[in-house]
Image 1 (cartoon, rainbow, N blue to C red):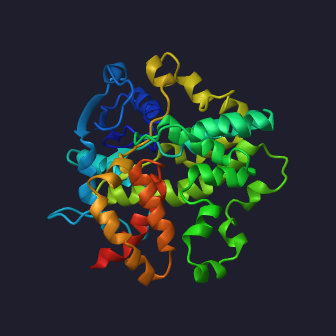
Image 2: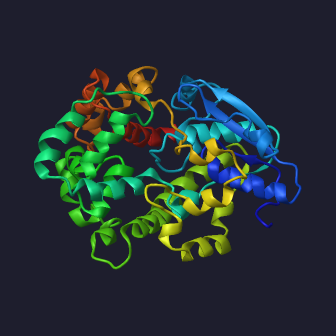
Image 3: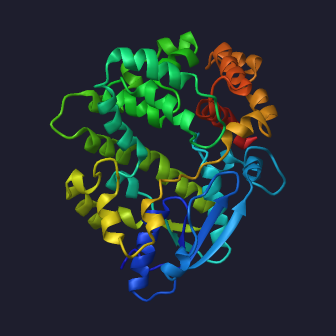
Length: 378
C-alpha cells in the first residue's frame, strides 16, 4: 500500500511487471492512469485491449525512431544526453525513458516503474541463454566449431533492434567462456579482448588484467550457489544499482517526474530473494511465479510476450542521422590527440559497421557517449 500511494503508473519497458502493479492498484479501488511510449521504428508486441482488461486509462504517444537523435545533437530548447547525466552512460534507452517521463509529466507528478523485476525474478533473456550455453557445451566440438559457429558468423547483418543475427553472434562469442566473462560479453559493450584492442598501449599498461575483471571475478570462482542465482545477485548489485536506477533517476528528474519501483520495496525484495530459483526460472521461462500469479488476471498475450526493452534504432542512427557527429567525435586525429583509445581500431569498427560487415552498435554508441560527456559543460 505504501508504494501504491501515487498519481500514475507509467511504462512500456517492463510492461508485464508493471501491469502486475496496475492490477494491485485496482484492488484498492484507486483510479489508475497508464502512460506508454511506442517507438515506431521498433516492432512492438500485443497491447490491444489491455487497458480495458485491467481498468486503466492508457495514454500513448508514438515516437518516430529519428526523434531520438536531437538528444545527441545540439538543438534549440532541447537537452543533450550529456546534459541529462553527470557521468558517461552507454545505455541508449535513456532517450525513450526521458521521452516517456516528459510525456507522463504533462499530467502527473509521480509514476510507477517495473524496475527490479528482472533481477529479482530472473526475467532477463541472458539467464535463459546461460542455461542454453550449458546445453550447447555438450554438443561435439567439431559440430560447434565447424558447422554451427561458421554458419552463424555468416548471417547477414541486420540493423533491427536485437535482431536474430545480433543475438546469435553474441551467444557464440560468449558461450564457451567462464560464467562471469560470458555474462560480461552478453551484457556489456567491450569484452576484455576488445578492451585490449581499444585502449592505447600506455593506458593499457597501467591497468592490471584483474582490474578489468574484478566485478565479475566472484562468478568465476567455484561455488555451491546456482550459477543463475549468482548472476542475478551480480546484476542486482551492478547493472540494476549502477545502470538502470541511475538512468531512470536522471531521465525522470530531468522531466521533473518522481518515479518509484515497487519491486524494490525492501520487504518484497527480501521475500522474493528467499524463494527458490525454480519459482523464478522454470525451464527456459523467467518470472514463473509472477506469471502464475497473474494467470487469469492479465491477458494471455501479455503473460507470454517476449521481453521488449526500450530499444532505439542506434545501428541505423550511426549510419544515418548521427554519422557526421560520430565521425567528428571519433575522428582519427581527435582520438590521437586525446591519447586514450587506439584510433586505428576505432576506425575499423566504424568501417565494418557502416559497410554492413558487422554490427558494432553497442561499441560505437559507448564510445560516442564517452566522447560527448566532456562537451556537456561547453
